[in-house]
Image (cartoon, rainbow, N blue to C red; front, side, top):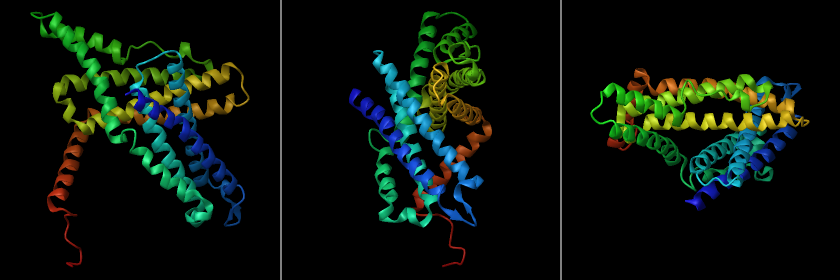
Amino acid sequence: MNILNNGRFGMAGALSGTMKSLIRRTAEHVSTRVQFGNKLETYGVVQEKIAHMALRQYVTESIAYLLSGNMDRGSVEYQLEAAISKIYASESAWWVADECIQLHGGMGFMTECGLERVMRDLRIFRIFEGSNDILRLFISLTGLQYAGKQLREVEKSVKGMDFGVIMSEGLKRTRRLVGSSSAPSVAEHSHKDLSVQAEQLSQLVGDFGTTCEKLLLTHRKNIIHEQFLLQRLANAAIDIYGVAAVISRASKSLSEDVPTGGYERLLTATFCQQAFDRTNHTLQSITSSKEVKLDAAMSDIAKKVVEHGEVVPVHPLGL
């Protein structure tokens, strides 16, 4: 397991460097390439792509340093963080490479340009050291298993008591483990200029804990079969960890008054707002009856395709 953890952690460090190189290539191209009478860098669509590239690289690198810092302090339980770093890094690097080629246009496909090889090489990272799909299940199930053990311990220790008391005590203990809406604020541990982002993180941790409670109480042992829900829960965990990583890094930069502190604050505030909105939606979808119906529909669609061995609809021209 330690070998896999080290491989996953190392991937985040390596791929953050890959993204730096791709962003450098992109910046050079858009600042010199002229289309429709203007340089590419002046167009909003191009600016949005570059901003997302910069955000993904910053988050990936921040996650790598946060994880390595915990490892240096002697932490031995970091398998979830290593899995998160591997997922985020591999998917972000692929996304950055794709957008880099997009901004280079047809030139990006040319062997001489070198970008097509980068994309080919990057594809394997979402598969080896544990495929991202399996790692998402690992993240969510490991976390839920730990919280579930606490509920079972409480249940055993209060046999004969009222069920309401059992659940009340169980939820109190679970909240302490996975976070709750009453979790202490993160603001006191971060730079004052990031107080809004710190409060967002506190809220996300609380909402995440509440969602975990609901999943455990609703599905109990059958939660292992709810992969639609588990995947969303893992996505929320990945975003929350990313938020914590950038707040930690930017707080240090601002406290030490490094030259890029203001820019890092901009990166952090932007990513945190995006992650806050995204995670709120993700957590709400986990307990949404509408999403349950959509999940069932997706399952039915997939089953029909497998049964037919191909796409199901007849050809529109009757061929």
